[in-house]
Length: 140
Length: 160
Image (cartoon, rainbow over all chains, first blue to last red; front, side, top):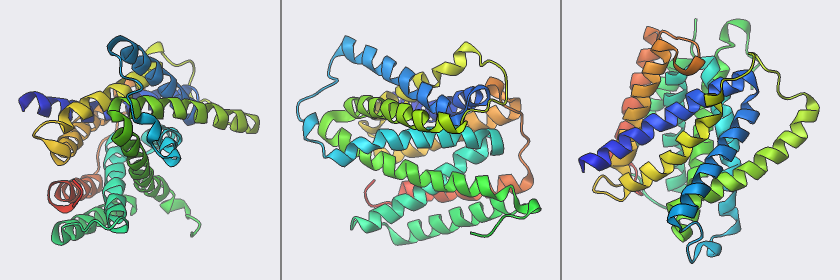
């Protein structure tokens, strides 16, 4: 459990670390070029790991629907936008606003796919996030 | 959309950041579907592969339009390795999700990890980006977003 908690917390650290590093690369290139390198280098590492421990193509993988393959292209836009944002509003603002957007749209997705969120917590959470976003962009 | 006047110009990136969280939701949904069929490792590998192809196509179109005005000189070598960190994230997350923490615990601790790293990154200007001091307004807004997100992660979403 402690080890799992360490993995979960470190995953968060790594997300912000990669955004910081990609942001630096985008200063010398562009957000899209930084996103390209992020994906190529990540692909190389994952391929190397996959070749060593196996299991890149597990049985059943080919049955995934075609639209599931658009996660990668969306990721390119997401990583590029992260590099663009972090040099403009900083790491903390970027991290929290992205998480806030993820939470609110996640609830919308739940509603659209017929999963009922717990009403009091979701409504209060969305309200707090929207107020936070409202305050963040309301500058002198 | 209204045209941003000079004093409100800073508003736009904050709203873009919020919107990009929506892209993340869609991305996670699609990669989650890949993972459902082939496991998290296959999903990440395929997402990186399809992403690489998409990035090359986008660059081929946009470079002709002059995309790529650099603001700084040559990047240090380590700046090309952000993808290592991103690829490892998938493996760490998969390990945590398949533990008693489950998805909600993993997301909550991940949120904490992001907050800790980014506060440090802004304070000391880590990895070549500018130092930033959080204003009182920033802190109020970030507190609300962080607590609201934790509430949703821990108590709100049915699917988690």
